[in-house]
Length: 305
Image (cartoon, rainbow, N blue to C red):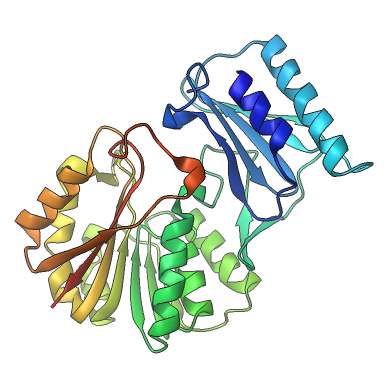
């Protein structure tokens, strides 16, 4: 646990949503189950193994000490989530959580929910992917994008803010789509986005009618029964991409499955969409460093010529 305590002792006051400590990367022996995130003004501690009250008290005391140094007189707000079995158990340990809870990333605003579910509304490891999309939109001011498995539509928000003309968001979760619409409103985006709360594999007609696209973002769950299983479904999704892309268009393909390496995704592309040319793998944020790059988030950029 010492590496986590060290990270707390050295952390700066977070302003944007960000990861502070990433034990899951395996670089800190004995701390592989700990993660500490900042969703200002709230800190969220997550454990992927059973914990004791003594451990939580020790961490809580470390957070109290550092917060008193960083923000004298300001209340510490922190949440603990246990993820070692079944449904996550989430507890407010100190302070409070604002409602609505809105965080920022490079000036962009997002609605989050840290007290329910294991996904908080914004995937922090995808920050570099959002940065790339922001840059892409800046250089393609009339670009049209398709955001598949859009979740709360963060890619859409950053693309439209940077100048994209249109983004079609598709996700079968009506709840996620509703938060996605709120995220657009938070950033005063009143036009350019459309929201299809449908199963992607049953919506190709609607998706095709809005194309072709200059950019397609594919960020599916790795294993979600009834929605998407990477080993079974990634290939059949990839087969549809060439017909949806403009000549010269890009596809940003994401995979967050520790058991499936970069080679898996590249082979899927080679078989299902040989017209796509590999460009690069985007880096993950430095704090998400992993002993094995193949275990970490894979974000691969392709281009069709």
